[in-house]
Length: 354
Image 1 (tube, rainbow, N blue to C red):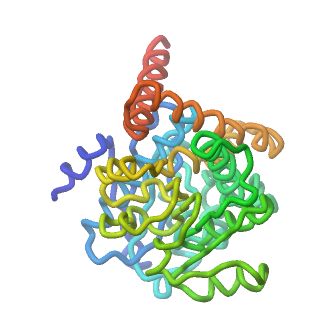
Image 2: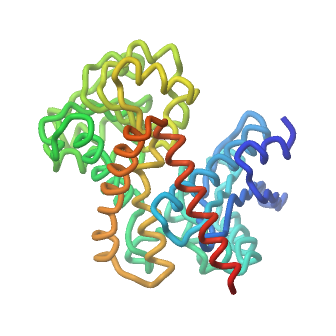
């Protein structure tokens, strides 16, 4: 697939490439939209098998960042920064400072936030050259680690799905599977423990499991290959995007399938078979926008208290979408996309009045 075919897939507007050979810095910057406001560019560092895969990933991340912000009607656009390479070989202070210099070229239209493979230490190096950073720790002028508010928002989204599907306002006593115990998954588990849910976790990396085990001795653990067979109320995928293939759908034994990942299903058409099996599928981008709320408030100069209040918008938005989807007999994914696009179109029309 050529570059422009990749871009047409999500109607993305701009794709840029940046390289500094002396630092082994190779970056792909995808900008989906800046209609609503400056774009949040999640930064991901990964060793891709093919550059074609990196381009596709950059465009997908940018698209979902736009979609998440639009659904929550926040003044934030969507973008991504994909860094190609082995983190053990290329990470250095100068690597990230060079990235900060490049970030400045966008003059505030592009803000960088962390994602997989990029640490807060890395962001601190970027900050030496650029002020356009979002989601920093409180000790460094931000409103806290973004995964905390993303997980808190997901809890509210899960409560909305439980209200709609299971007729309960509480997660207490519900059996919940968390697939993938990275930064977001581990934080979600901590929040679920507070909610007194019955949790089963899995991850391919044992060290992540061990950290959770040390904190919660009696937590249930399942092997990655067997996790789909676990009977549960909610299956929450926080692993890689589009991980759940058709071959696993027949094994899934849950009432609600959702996730911290934007799109847990490899093929969206499989949502129909889930519905036939009375499984409610809620794509992650509907419930995982807590970080979007935090970062918008950082740009606008508000504090953590406002973020805590606005996280409840995720509950209301999720429940509204579920209800309207049922009333109009249209897919939840289709409805969410339609609502997001309508909001961007309306904001764009208003800005034309200037």
